[in-house]
Image (cartoon, rainbow, N blue to C red; front, side):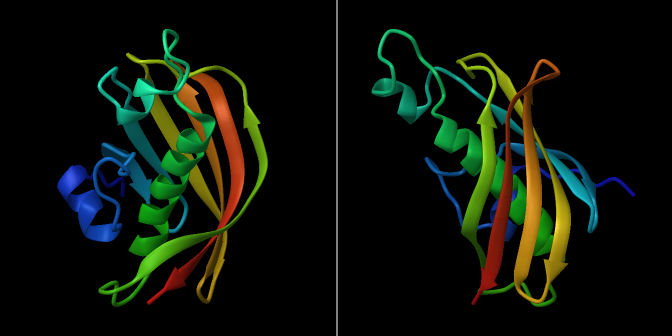
Length: 145
């Protein structure tokens, strides 16, 4: 069954808050398998103030962070007793950036679980704008708390 989530539901699962919350909504979630998250990129974003002035480009590290947060929602949904728990990055591998993300773009993050055993999860994220892949990464995270 596909599940959709709004910003309030996302904030119940991950501790991130503005300006570091980089997922606006979940449009599809297949428990234990995959998740699709959306980030609407606007000129009002704090990072555009100093990153490439005059030619706004979303920083690649924040695209990876958006994919990781989306994956964090998926991993947190797998846990029993979520209260007081958080997901932390362990590693990021095979990162590729293919196209700049600019104000007005809708960043779509598709993240799949490759392995989740104990407190360690391995996920793969792809980010798209208008159906074209703009970034990808393999990530590992751990549950703490």
